[in-house]
Length: 457
Image 1 (cartoon, rainbow, N blue to C red):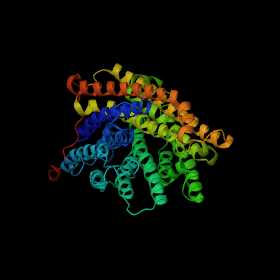
Image 2 (cartoon, one colour):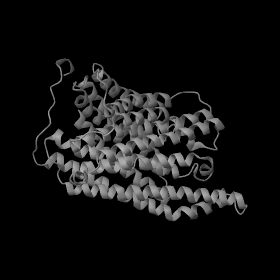
Image 3 (spheres, rainbow, N blue to C red):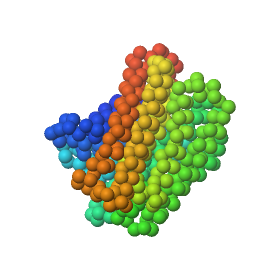
């Protein structure tokens, strides 16, 4: 079951990368595919995001959870058949929901832009993995290791986020608060939390060592649980919400730095003196890069929440750059490392070519960095033109005056397109490597767990 989830996620990554490339191309060259509503920028952007989060990362992280739970608890997975069928249900919901956005039926709610019926089906598809995992660990009485704590909590938080995102009857201010909450929750309580679980599992597993400080990892977990979603409103500083809400989100955003510190200390400490092992294991290199760079989006988000900074970067592409770094950077690197580590064991085949995996890391590292830095720079430039026009009275950033902003960010838009193209090339290499490993990898020892009980067959 874990293997199927990982392979489906790898296939959706290619679609997510393609849609993201077309979206950015459309942003730089607006006349491209002009006249086709399905390919308009306003629909492409949520389509690409939905496929990336719901089609690629979600099945991949669910599959990772199905892999980790029996290995960390010693108990077999429960409701295996239900979990396997739910994968195809999730795929169907993501495809139909994405096409619904393309045909203009999206509801406009950030991230959860599917029509209400698709959002509710998505909630069901996310609740089932939480049930499978919760039922599998309910008799596990020992204190869970940090890796299990992060992964299981993320799976439980995911359907809760989906349920909250569909609260009806909110006024505009309430809707903006809810959008900020759910966006931050998806990024931190789902993606980052699950990814950290993979990091804390893979680092000791790939080095035959141990996590240097489990207690520190637990401190990071509780900090993430208490602040991850509530820090989201800092993105709307100077927005329609109350000032006390802005202040609280800024403070909680700063507390997220504690998570970055706990990860950095644990990973660097656990891998201290293991330079040769990092060089020899491509999976460990992916995990090391992803874990080492987790502080970047956390620190930049915390910085952007300050009122003086928010007056410049608020409501600009700065936040898109941070989101891209979380999704395709942190999420992409760690899940790729997990895939390269466990897929050969699940298939009984060696990785087809570690050289290709190294190229994947290089291309994705360059592409994600160039893209995110370009979006951060575009946010700064746009913000400075808005502030400059208002402060000097030289122009107004509406109507014809908006050309000042467009002129400032036009070159940066081309750099963003180049970065996305390079990242997509890395994704193509990843997809090809996974395909060749499945079909042509050399035979190796296959990992087999104790068979599942008869009631779960």
